Every structure is written in structure tokens, then in C-alpha cells.
Image (cartoon, rainbow, N blue to C red; front, side):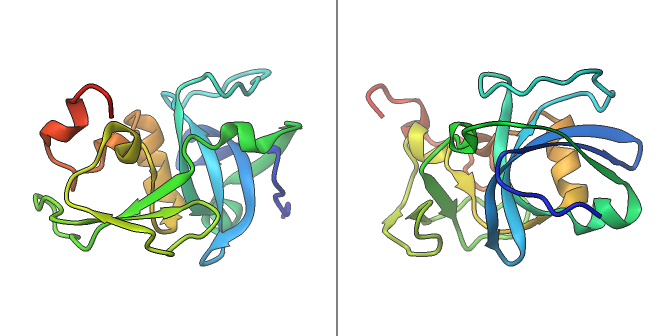
Length: 168
């Protein structure tokens, strides 16, 4: 079993889908690493070359499940994994029932997760793009990769006007 480190480029085969990740941080939250997960259709990509301009998102995940039930290979290394950090913010809310819209959002800085630096009722575009708080199991990460998820599609955001105002 590999021990992933910041900067590692990983090719992960899990439940028939191939996923490509750049490890952005050391262990971050509850045993997971923040990774940059590249959107894909689940097909294997020969000679994958990571690029922060390729479509994807940041998420904190534990790679234990694919290491046990799938395949995790280190296929490269990037010099500056911080280039793959999309936002310096992390967002969270108390709603957890599908269909609910968050009444308050808790924002913290990436360097102080859970610090609760700011509480807002609606999110600006920049805030909506903040990484979702929490550590996600890899099966959920695969679903998000295959559906081209981005944090501004968080189901608890809803359709708020503040997301589309100019100057945010």
C-alpha cells in the first residue's frame, strides 16, 4: 500500500472507474487528505498529465477504501501542489437533509479549518466555490468526479441571487 504525500499524482481504480488526483495536503481532517480531483468519465487515461487548468475540484477524502478494494498507483509528482488548491476558504452548514437550503454558512480559512471565521446567510460566488467541509469517503468522491461536481453545486446552496451578482 502506498503512503500518499503532497504533490503525488494518483491514478485510482475504484468500482470500475478510473480517477485522477493530485494530493494537495498531508493528513488534514479526520485522516483524509485534500486532493484535487479531476473530472472525467471514468475511463483510463494513458500518460495522464496533471494541470491545474483542467476541470476539477478540491475535496478531503480518505484513500483507505480504494487501497483495500481497488487500486491506487502513484503515476507522477507535481512540484507545487498548492497550485491545485482552488480556494483559500472552506464552507459548511448545519443542513444535512436533501432538499433543505442552508440558512447560514460557516466559513473558515484553509489554514484554520473549523475556525468559524465568518458566518453568512448567503454566499458570494467566491464563497460558493470554497471547498466543502468534511472528509468524504472515496465512493462519494467518485460520484462527484463522474458528475463533474464543483463546490458551487452544493445542494444546500439553492438558487440564491447573491451567487450571480456582479462584484462578488
